[in-house]
Image (cartoon, rainbow, N blue to C red; front, side, top):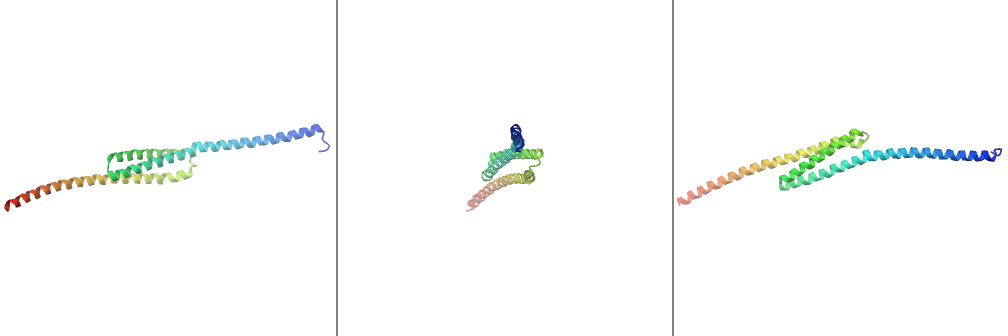
Length: 166
């Protein structure tokens, strides 16, 4: 290097600096492309996944609250509200299926869809079974009330007939 002139040394030094700057630029562009891809995945795949999962959780919690109220009060309005929230849960589960169809790399989500749908459907079926039992109970209660009325009238007639004999 001692036989190089000052101009050649400066040129070589600037060449090395330019090579370092170019390599840093390449590394920076590559890193930015990776960051951009990760940000895209985050905004298009993972954020919607979490948002939809939160929507399912929120609507199912509201469903459970209304079902509990219905069980304790037998108020049809609570059952109606529960049905609306069931519909919201079903809609959100459809969104989850569509998201997984679009992004199959959401493996954990894919494994959870079918068991989740199955359990929600079982819960909904059980709610309707409870409603059917309440309707049957109401019919039995009506029959019991009618039979009690008839019994009380007959007892009254019997009492009057017995009192008339004494």
